[in-house]
Length: 408
Ligand code: SF4
Ligand code: SF4
Image (cartoon, helix red, strand yellow):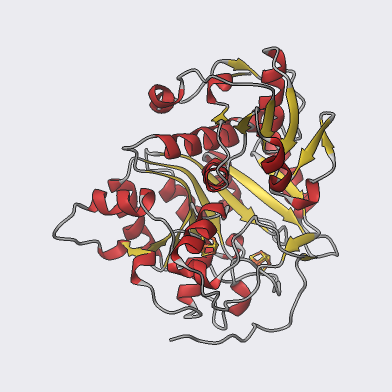
């Protein structure tokens, strides 16, 4: 398979880069593996990998050690660092904050690259989407005029078939969970898609999206927009879709992400995966035994500088989230606001179902919200995602919704 960078990114991304010394690849996952192989083919020496995932530290990938950011800080002098992860923006700002220079990306290696023969832990036919997401993330950081969203999460329901005590989307706190209001959602999407350049990935999430019987209609509606790349759906593997839903999953540009929680919870995951494989629907299955503990809404009293650091290092600060006609910067901000678990911060969201501003155009408002946020106030009540937190057992079940302090 030959990978080509999408045309709209070419002018910004394809300048050549003066890589110095031996190289450290930041990102010990699929994209890191591909960049490693392309560097080796180009005769470059790769010293090691670096990753923010603590569970990988000290182990090896392709015979190279995986180090932590702290070790990188000590070792980076004289080496070039290539960020090779979809969380490009976060890692880029993380390294800037640490005053680590000589940081590059792998776009120039990837364009026109022949990826066949590279051993990766996923189907080759599915690699285009994460690579396009990576390229988009690089473009968002280095282009000055773009008005694009990498991932737009749409909360199609707050209802779930499981009751996970530590759900990072905060579903365990909803006492009366609801499906999304279709009219408000479509009006909001029309406003977003009509005023920005592009969404790379729609993420349909919940709760459990398969519980919403309108899901086929939502997928069909999204597929009518011309300025998006693909639709991801996240399911917990407890339900097998009906014919109507399978039809819309088959006919549109959808990838299904199945999480298998084991312990007899995700009872349908193998059946759903087998159906996808048989009918050519792109899918992934992730077995999940541990999570990080991001629980709670306590106030952290962070300074503006600390909030900016928190926001930049958090790996979901560009997972824009649409909930109840409002566009937020991340799923925590959206659900904590909907639950009234944090104070109302009007700057943290755009009310896209009612967009009006006399001084600025709607596009300018989106542009600022997408590109010019140093932090959001919700970060003061939250642990940044992707950063070291204690490991906890995944999907511990509770019998009822959890209590919390209402802040308004
Ligand atoms: S399966 Fe668990 S983690 Fe996933 S949305 Fe439902 S409650 Fe949250
Ligand atoms: S509110 Fe939390 S999850 Fe959202 S960007 Fe800030 S630190 Fe990350």
